Length: 220
Image (cartoon, rainbow, N blue to C red; front, side, top):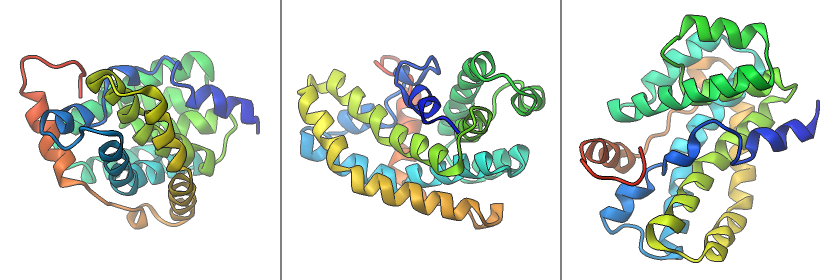
């Protein structure tokens, strides 16, 4: 296992398309729920322990070797918002292109053939981690960090928030990230039916409203 591969996969410059998405931060800003760095911290903490934990567990399970098609179905069942399902598959398709070019392997090729319109991003992320020689906990860390890193970066652009403050929010979340990654990796050792299925209704509602807006900075 190469920890350098983890740095490549978790790097925001990895060409997987995440920079175009706010992780629900844009609709939260529009609704007035995020105005300050403290608001961002609350938003990120809530997202991490709900949608972030669910995504981290799916990624860890894929890296563990669970059936990716069954995991993709499980991800669908855990994503009630049609808008978020569409986003997850679009991001999965973009990540798949980058992953196949970076760490080519038969498991990625098989999933690409089975889901030509894209599998859910956390499932592709976990399979990519597996192709890169990483373990379930590494995949969980990537997914958990993505769940808060994307919104923090987006809010800097949306509110002209001081980037030092946004980075401090992420740094203070480090103990929570550790707990979520550990919990997700532990859950991945069980059956797919036992994976976390936490949801965040305001994220679902915000995603549907955001998808209907004619003008927006981020795709989601």
